Length: 166
Image 1: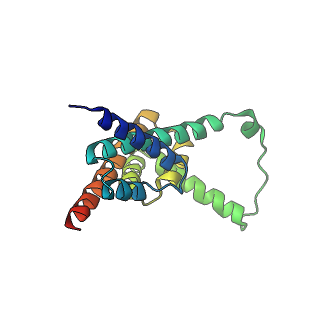
Image 2: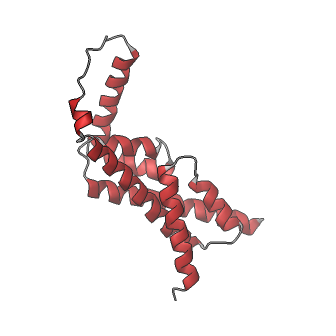
Image 3: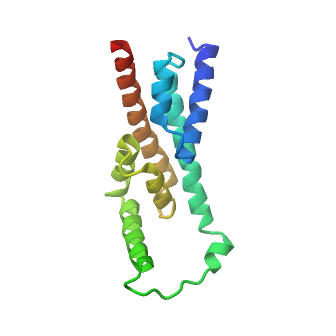
């Protein structure tokens, strides 16, 4: 039976998930350890809530980048000719290769899943690149959700096991 406590735990977890996905200094791992270590939240509402919250936060970032590209200020900006040996030229080249990799159906979704599940490469950067490419919003959302779920559940179960051993 779903109690008021369960829903309070869900809302707390969703809120922290959104916060941690948008503001990198709020670590999900620390929240999981603190919440389960203190026995304040249950594994199920913690896992589901954080996963939903993290997905919502990354969706907001994805859409912000995607919509930001359409702003008149961004579109009016003229590109200056780059010296091929400058750091700006190297950065532009690296960014274009990375965006192409993220955009590719063969590599983009597996990279997004691994990033969400393991944290390498950082999901924050992958989200920014994904929003700048033609990656599907629905595909992004589903794959990010699955990656976050695997990561959150794994960390929660490891933490719970460690707490019980302690």
